[in-house]
Image (cartoon, rainbow, N blue to C red; front, top):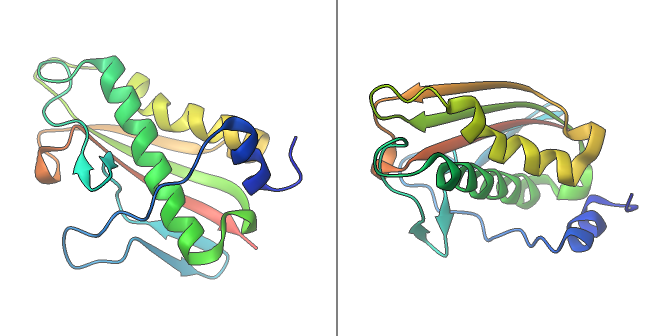
Length: 153
């Protein structure tokens, strides 16, 4: 295992993106005590929403899983910008929202995109509590939204 989370990201060939600009009146991440709470992050890549539409009709479950991974990277970027990624002690909780077509029940598999990424990066410190929720609509017609609760030094 790498000595720092920054080194671990380098080992994995992962670069944190720039922090996504809020689409409304909120901040990307906020610290309270030893916890950082991120706002819900969408699968934004270079300022563009990567996956639009409902999972199970417009977006495949596999593409939505990738959207959850991108959203988690965006959430980590917000944590890094606020406190520095190397100050992460552990990931406490992940909440994933999946814009779901009628009858789509694969939300847990979609949100695994975020959970598996966090496990790759943080190992045991990436094991977390989680909610995977199907919703009718998400902001900007995004397919997935992910928020994190992270314990920090």
